[in-house]
Length: 144
Image (cartoon, rainbow, N blue to C red; front, side, top):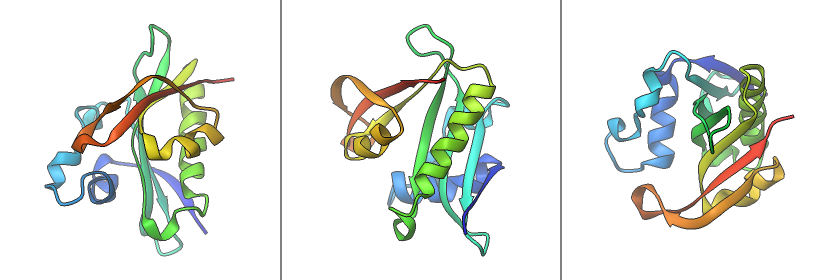
């Protein structure tokens, strides 16, 4: 059983660092937006309360439109393919919509494009090298 909760940034930081910035100091996974009062940090927790997935969302325009940006989406390898990422994505998209966003967008790792496409996101522009020289695309989707 997985439950998604809104939490403080410090709760998601260890998993975000371990998955997205492996081998680097914890501070390397700290985003400037983490302390923004409008930021939404989501933790997916298992039945024992362990954080097995996380995402961070905050208002940031995309192409001049009202949008929320997704950052720091990560899941523990033990739960990949079990729906945890989808729970986090759906919860964040619902909050973005209720917050008045017309769009959601992110810088997504190329290897994760299939996952994001299942939730209506589309890549835009050219592939580029993001953090740690990992290939990324900007992705976006309209909100209903």
